[in-house]
Length: 124
Image 1 (cartoon, rainbow, N blue to C red):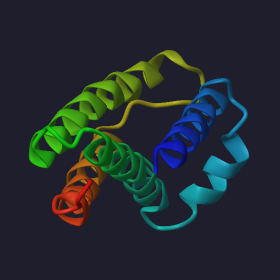
Image 2: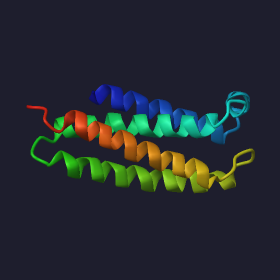
Image 3: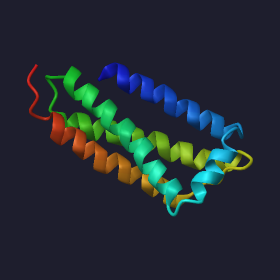
Image 4: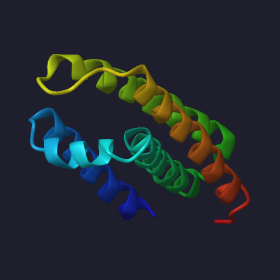
């Protein structure tokens, strides 16, 4: 799970950097043709990151209550992606969006809870 979390983090950072540099305009235009496509993608990408990192850390940090691991990861990701969303206003072709930020938060909340439920009773 740890390797998957690392690989997905690298993938997501790459997508964000490519978008900030203007190399994702065509895929983003195609995505915008799907009703709520952009919001669904925010939910899935950030939520998947939350699920993978939370699951990995719950499995690695057995001495810490899984609930606190999930809350800590959720808080850290919420702060990171709040700043990331706000920073988009500084890049040509990108816009800061409260709806995107809410989709990020929804992914963090829903898939964070899912990770906690799936992993809370795992034995070492």
